[in-house]
Length: 387
Image (cartoon, rainbow, N blue to C red; front, side):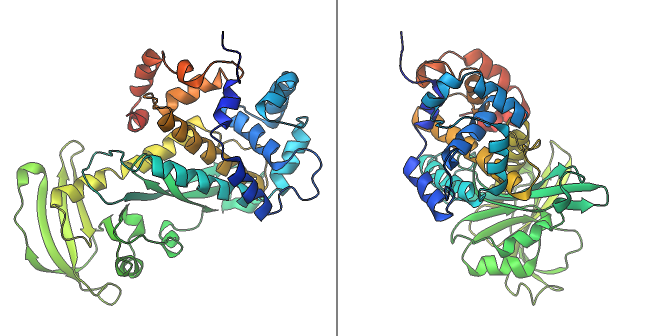
């Protein structure tokens, strides 16, 4: 019989404690704190994410009922909803944002060679944003419309492993394209974007940085065709042209590549613009198709993490909860890779949610859940997490 650590404690063995303490010290998170440290706060919020708790009262009731096990979970203080609420409101959310970046860096190294459906050596990112609706009376600082509040989650997703490498939380009124002003483009990488990011001055800066972009074009763009290339219409391609802009030449004074593709599955005609002239046109179309993975990512985290119902109403509490949720997502992705688990993240989280207090080795715990995993994989929005 296994008499080792609880499942929750085994999960936290992958937790880089030294890096976490560095983030805490950077923002003086434990300054004048005698009880309930930043680590206690993180562990309680992590427990809430893993076990799908609904409220602070819910967290308090569950953890207090098992107070003799809290020490073995790493929680050194008594859990109180008022204490946790106060910590979420006043502890700097940047502690958990910085720590999430530490986990993201680790996960990206683990998923470097991951296949995402297109044979390409360069790093490929998908950029998009999603709005999280809030109640205006509870979150007046996040006013979106006259009767509605909301925040926007801007995400740059690394398609190798579906790891979010850049996240910015802003007011919902901010236009998506403005995020390009703070995004630092990596030379040689591909950035896939929808037409909401079409701003030629910003795209030209990305081009000057040596990065490649693939973006969906708008109908009202005026351009002059320089020459066309031969295509195979059986593949779905309709045209491949090298063009220069006419009405936006000052913003983007160099050549662009224009590709039209017909999606027979959805009966949809798509037009793309890119500054890459070396990849085959069909590969460009396939890369744009991969952009939907960021949409699936948003659906997944909204359904399986606690980022729609918040435990606090302040801006700091909301950002803290989102960043801890992202940390748990990435931590589970790290566990999946290091333990060579073949099941989806959905399956892993579901199993962990009901076994956090069990004393079973993680690798053994996730060995015989194949039937459950097959049922989960039938849900379209989850299939991209499967190996």
